[in-house]
Amino acid sequence: MSNNPLEAVTQAVNSLLTALKLPDESAKANEVLGEMSFPQFSRLLPYRDYNQESGLFMNDTTMGFMLEAIPINGANESIVEALDHMLRTKLPRGVPFCIHLMSSQLVGDRIEYGLREFSWSGEQAERFNAITRAYYMNAAATQFPLPEGMNLPLTLRHYRVFFSYCSPSKKKSRADILEMENLVKIIRASLQGASITTQTVDAQAFIDIVGEMINHNPDSLYPKRRQLDPYSDLNYQCVEDSFDLKVRADYLTLGLRENGRNSTARILNFHLARNPEIAFLWNMADNYSNLLNPELSISCPFILTLTLVVEDQVKTHSEANLKYMDLEKKSKTSYA
Image 1 (cartoon, rainbow, N blue to C red):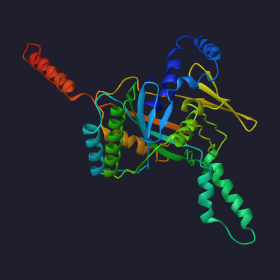
Image 2: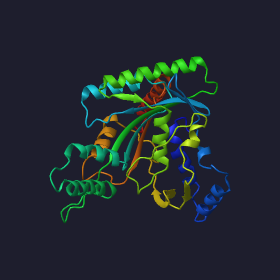
Image 3: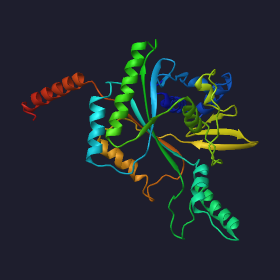
Image 4: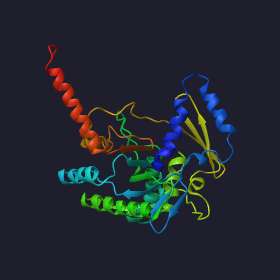
């Protein structure tokens, strides 16, 4: 199980997809899922408790935090340098730090709020307001109507950015908690220095966010209100009772039943087969920024996860020296 809490769902899905090497493996995977006792998927999630005093999540074998940031469109050298300095000097070595970009179609409340400032007046106000509301609701459910010949995936989406971090901690000692609290302050201050405003995610916000990720309903445009139960583990509060997951050869099928109606969604997972030999932080920022380009945008709701791990400086320095000495030795041979 990953140290990062938001990676648990992805790893559970990946473990099922990895087993699908033969044509009959999907049936076997579904058979295994069917034999698990309820709530089967909830038990795969490591989330357990939230400490209100420290603002930290206490999981099975890890302890961590989650921040929500206000998305910014574009950056400059000072922002890049501030983020680079944070990654190189503030984060512990060898522990994953994840950045999640989530695109959601649950924009009904935001449309209602926005239309209050742009409502029609006059005798036909009610009729025109209904037409305007239906126009934007349809754009969120499908896409904006475009002239003939233009096939661009223009939709209404709510983009949210999250930072999540977890480190191994079985005893959850006071020293570990204080160390994690200081790390949260340092990271938030570093992000603020990069003009990125953040707020901590508490237990209520957490089950709303993770619940939206897990229980995706393609027919809904409004977020579901979840009531936090302080006496129940968080993992059980993130999965709906009607949650149904089926494994296919190339994808997963998610089924839900809400308000007497059944909904079905297909889940696809894409990831790098291996890490690139050379990677630059600004390349990833460019890729994220390209999503706002009408021709490169993704119409379906999605979650993009960027996982960063800072290597130990001593180990990296030693490996670089060994590689240099090896290449220098080869350069002096007759084959150079």
